[in-house]
Length: 160
Image (cartoon, rainbow, N blue to C red; front, side, top):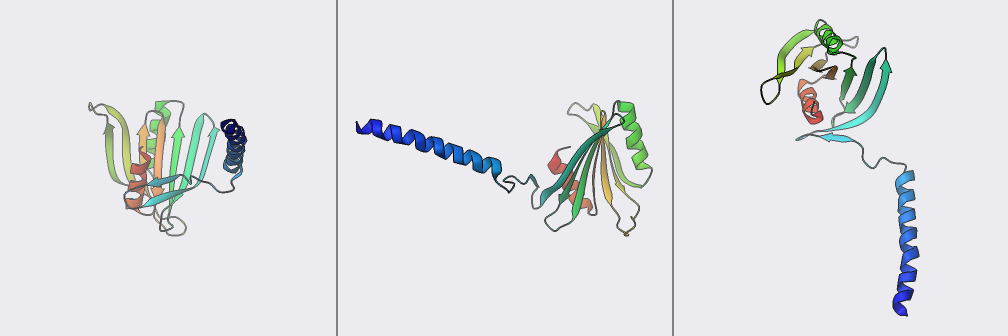
């Protein structure tokens, strides 16, 4: 008789615990996983992300903050065709000083895209941004920030 009493009492306790835990998970006012990209010695905290589609182009962006408060930006533009993406990639390179440019190859040595590191002209605040542009198929990716080291580190952590 004692075993049945324990089982009868345990079942409602488990149900109540599960229900309360579910409510806490659903209505917890803080983000329990702040979407951090970690690298060897720095952490990039995701601040905002947006996505939209306009004129056949899908646009996705994220804004990150480094551990020392600097902003970094990631953008992804997906076009209807590879030709449109290549034109956008090429146009982006005309506005700045190209520091590095190379083809991206797969494990067998086949061309899978292009990558360029550029220095943008100073903005209205006098800040000079460095940008990594990557072209893969119909998509152009960019990672932008004031520090080349941090830009390259975020690029690596995103696995583009």
